[in-house]
Length: 162
Image (spheres, rainbow, N blue to C red):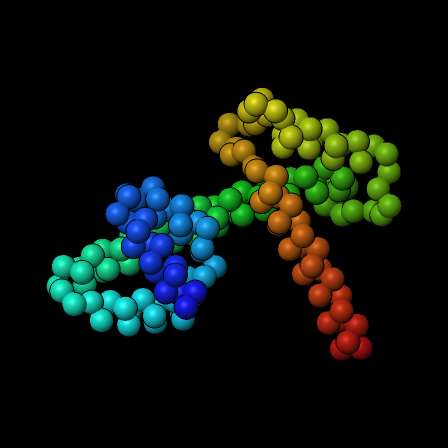
């Protein structure tokens, strides 16, 4: 039933144009799973006219195109965030790239300055080098969280193997 409601919403949105379809796809991206596409195929097969079937096929192509663009955009954003996170962490590392915990005040200060000048500047006033892309904080935080979770999981696995 939820898949049928989403399909109906996409069909209605398609009548209003690509922007409206984009909005619906963005709102429902995680629902576009195997079950959704199976139901979509069943609904397409049950269309009464070739025109309806063609409209459903066009809509499916548009939804897939939008989904691919969103995934590429997300991957690019995460790649950018990984690069910025590595640069941030390097601010507190020694000449060999090692950290010594707890960080001293100078190392913490370097990280704060880096965050303020490179990542948290307001109105696009970040001091970016040639070729550097800005990083959105949501991607940076998501990447940080993923790295911390992986480190904790790796540590737990290491302890379990001992």
